[in-house]
Length: 386
Image (cartoon, rainbow, N blue to C red; front, side, top):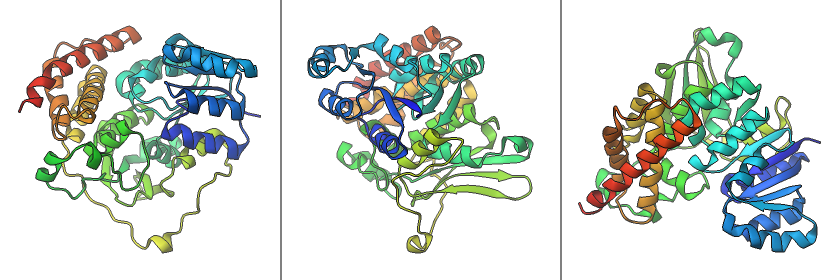
């Protein structure tokens, strides 16, 4: 039985991962969440893993008090998360959102695991460092993001020289047809209403700004060696086609499925085989039409910012990610407006230009991340007062 460690078990991706784990008959040997003790304990009581970890050290006593009497081992804190990521298991699902996933993901990579990566920020902030360690450790990274998983399934590595373009699809989010005036007036409640996907707050806002697609372009650059000029984005409101690969002979291979994270997670858990997953079959007749649009750079400048950062190097993509995390948190706290998110990211990148240094080690990556967050936070009061 394949042993699985799940990091980020109580979020939306974690919930889908648990469904795929149960349907596939996998053994959950390690499980972690940030601070949702009740939910985490319920998962541990159902699956009885060898170790249950809370990232927030303050949650350690409550976790131990509930699970300890049941004979279940617990731990808490950043070091415990890193140790859990490297424990003896065939696959590690990294579903921790944000930059916080970096060290646990690297621990799983260094241990030579098959890492099912559902986190964009690890490769956006530290892609060169992470992929170098993948090669050194003989680890495998399987992309869980629906778009990258789609590309992975139709990407013929043996025909790399014949690949002319890879295309990630975007739903367009809740503001696909909204005017700039409506977007300027939008608050968190409107921005969190994604038309197709059920996701956490951070990724939902990233979808609304289309920064998530910008981050995915950067991630794709590290996963698929075609170069930034051959990575594109199209808006596909139905979220049925998740990715496409174009070949020199005129062929275009596309991956289709209903919008459910269970599908790509199940693919990564079973790979290189295929297994059943609790998702409905795709019915193209019932769908009727699939439509496509070019992204609007004027209303969604995050795509432009991400592309520019990619060309500038990993230090810039690191700063982009850090500034975006600060901006999204500030918007959710109603300190800045929706359009200020991209503006704050751009202002931070401008301020960081020429002073980021090389992101060639974990310490360097964390230093750039910290500096970018400081710069972004310093700019919030001026934006909030506009």
